[in-house]
Image (cartoon, rainbow, N blue to C red):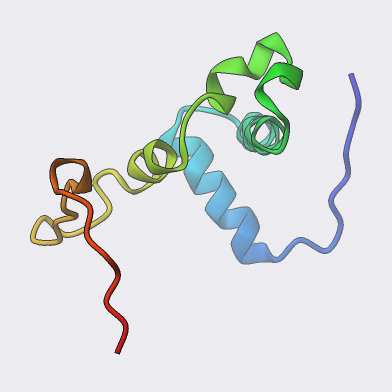
Amino acid sequence: MAQLVVRNLEEFVKRRLKTRAKVRGRSLEGEVREILREAAAAALPAKAVPKAVKGTAQKGLGTLLAEHFAGKVPPEFKIPNIREEPPRPAKFR
């Protein structure tokens, strides 16, 4: 396996990564590894993604955003389901 060294990483980034890892029940190294796998998979065409990360590459942007922000937005903030609305032209001022 390859190794990667990241120099000059801001302290607040390291703290946020540690917190994120703790919430997900991973080590800091494990969390960074997963973030890098997801980023590498998202940047590749689906047919070029290794089997180990295939599940993460198949998720759409909306799904990834919904998972990321789940429980982090106030309950009064509602995003309409646009799939249930008919298409309409854009309004420019």
